[in-house]
Length: 270
Length: 303
Image (cartoon, rainbow over all chains, first blue to last red; front, side, top):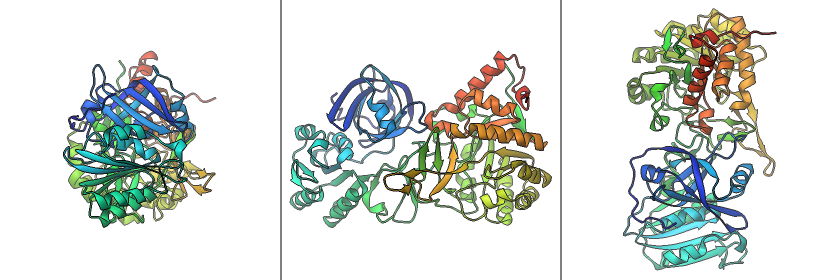
């Protein structure tokens, strides 16, 4: 699938597509699965920006859907296409991973707000682990993007070659040094922030990483947007399950107000 | 086609399928997916006298065929509801049930007055929220307190008052009789069952509040049993809820004694579940040759 750089932003309208055919299944590493799905007109009707998510039903015995960030999506004929990358973490994602090309999934989406990007902007994309795939979608939406990808080790690396095709600079950091630089994403992030002038830092990954990167971006005076995660039920803003604390003391919800938040509005100690 | 209209303590519902409080917000979100006017009614997210931020996250844990929540009555407060949400809801053709929680009987009374004046169709007095410290569940587990809150609500409400019971009691019929005696026009049940889930790796409860309320298909048989017991103990109509995710589940609840039903967590799995429940319930009525869905209420034939 070739992501469409000129996706039109839709008036928000949710879709439930109960029969999304898996048209491609690959395993970007031994722990992760990438599925490309036919999603009807979901992208046309509810795309708002990279970083949105879909809520996928994971079997009859499990009540709750699993929220998974969109990697890339495109308007297409006869059906819009969308790909997700996820790690097998529990029974739900294992059920999902057992599916084959040609089988179908029940998908609710596109949900959430997406990153705010300008097509002329220069962005630093920072992804950690399974937070890397949504940053790939971002790479198509800016004027010029650099990327920093952090992984536990080389066996968990994802999409590095894909980023290299489209980003100006790609830096990789692994905790054990088995690929790229040894350490966390903050090392290369600081080096790039010191060297280049960015319109924004966009970040998705574990919360300690988001906190560290947002502090770094603030130090260099660059606006930072982060993708937050929380345990979720409805996915649409009705049940108020996925609450996150904001710096002003209010509660916002990952599914409806997010998942993308300005780093400055998040209560990082909450 | 069976007549799907029902009457809940004087409130006319075009069909018996309503949405349970706390699972449907104020109708805006799911309203993007389908016409909510197809539902019989909506019980809005639980209201309190003032804005409540709710509990810290995680607030949600998945459990076998169900889920725990510890949202903690996050809501904008009764005045904001009346100013910003109620006008939107009133554009729709469905019964608006205002669910309220207070920490004193006076707070319940005050909210009943405001909401009656604002034009809701019915008030659902929540004396059973397991997720708040003050009031809430305490009122729902002691018959004399439940009766006191009911009496105060009745004295201040100009619309029918329905009291929502907690299943976290030894004998639910005792509470049901107490609220009926205090003037409740209807009874709804069940609220969630208190539960707990633990992450074996971190040895921490998944919910930040440690415990929460269990809902979803797992609780259906408990709810059906309690509706049946309460139906045998009181004369006021019952709104039955707890784990309904199909028309057959709704029919069970009505056979057990409910005049209408509410769907809740099922919509999280399948956003279209409330409409599917309604369609399946209609199909059951037609298959059984019923001229009215009302014929199901209390029609169980116990051994």
